[in-house]
Length: 341
Image (cartoon, rainbow, N blue to C red):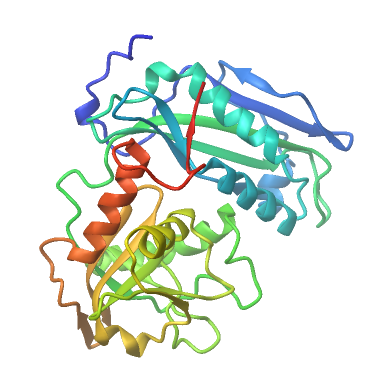
């Protein structure tokens, strides 16, 4: 199949509609068969539960063209499982995992001409999401829901290379103790927007949220998990019940431990420990890893020895290995790369 007539090397990280998307509806206690649609628009009742009480969960993953021309997705089974758990937490009927994986395959296969060619460092970003579509005015779960999955071709998150960023410790809390910080719901991201704009207005690239109970432990940014590297090369990732279980972070931990022979610690990380680390980064689907050069908390500045010019050597090795697995230049663990037929 011929590719779309797009200048793939000039793609940004923004939305443009593609040919097909997947839609399924939940009504009368069950999900319908679901299928592909040409229409990127939807019509909602003015009293739909998503508009009144924010019942919505979502996921994010990518489809790539590998070095040998295959079209693949990366660990979509984990996205299906996380979305299932997120929906249960918001009292939504979980979308079956098997149907989720079928929807991913259907959308990618139907839009194969939108998957950027290998070597462009671009991908087809996929956004599965579900929301309360039925009318509800009393505070309760809706009776009707819709699951949708669309895609959009995107370029690399960093056009000029992954330059280290400067982060500020936020004065705001991202999630409450025993709240919804561990699920992927739009309401969590809405909560972080004010802090994000506040950070940008003060010259910072991103926020570091601390634990809301004591404000002494590192949690995450508004949309990515943290990782740190000790001076002896040990990889450290923060642990908290309020942190979203990032698929990228979990994959990087496995790469570090099982492929690169690194020592890994997944544990609570005190903010006071940051001065002892050699490297830092944030990780997620969009960029894989973004290096962090500095963290600022009031008058205190933590500058990592890896500097502000490039990724540290350990972080770079992790990044290159995971990207190699995704693009087929490095053989990864069995089942990580799913070929779309």
